[in-house]
Image (cartoon, rainbow, N blue to C red; front, top):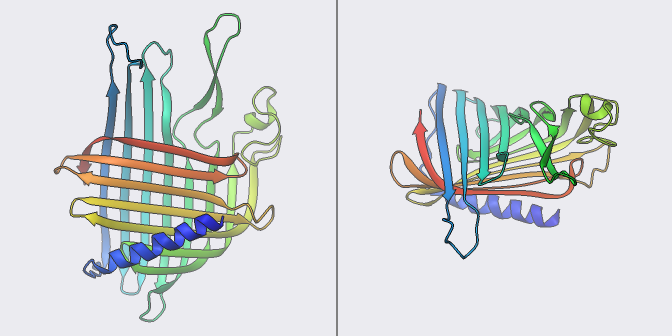
Amino acid sequence: MKKFLLALAVIVAASTVNAQDKKEEVPPNGWSQNGTIQLLLNQSAFNKEWTGGGTSSIAGNLTLNYDFNYRMDDFTWDNRFLANYGLTKLKDDEFARKTSDRVEFNSIAGKQIKETKWYYSYFLNFRSQLTKGYEFSEDAETGETIRTETTHFLSPGYLQTGPGMLWKHNEFLSVNIAPTTARLIFVDDKFTTVPGYVDGDYFGVDEGKATRFEFGASVGVYAKMFLLENVTAEHTLNLYSNYLDKPGNVDIDYLLNVEMSINKYLSANVIFQAIYDDNTVGAFQIREVFGLGVNHKF
């Protein structure tokens, strides 16, 4: 935890210096919106004479980011919808397998305190996944691949909301601190009641139940860094501590998206995500995606 707090301080400090280099532009009153759809592709192929080893594969990752924000003098309301879905298919593998699956909505309203960078705030965060998730195993007798459903849309689903204080340096750097955050985890009760699905609790939800309520503190950080003329790095960090159960076990969700623009329609992207959730796995979950992106902005 200390290492992540140090990393948080480094991100904020570096982004503050970087953001100060950008011209301060106060958005006009009213609604503003922008978004990006991006498709990342990866492919590898080997003919039968190739002796160096390897398996032919194809992979794709589709990402949607959409922002719709409102401003009226000292009141701001920022909304962001994120969706990310990826598949990979290995040659001779019966099933395509997910490499990423996430849907998330963030909303935060703020009332500025006089002429400072601080705001009274209220936030809402929802996240889940789009399609079913599976665990894969092998039939001991036939050798066939067996897949067992372990998750699907809204199972699990996470909803967090609460009042707090927002420090907003500009549109590229903000930190929201919410010491009284309610959190609801909801799941399909078949995973906690039907024999053969899950033994014991499921994403923190007790056996036989469909929801889990938590009350704690959360910190959300957003930082966009302009590394070079055509290279940007977006950092999103969310921390949560549950006062009611093991408050020292802080949930961490960190996402980095580095975009290297080639032209109006093409970019190379690196996506890195690290998640720690003691209710799911008592270790870090890591994913990384790199590829050539086809973009459409609207």
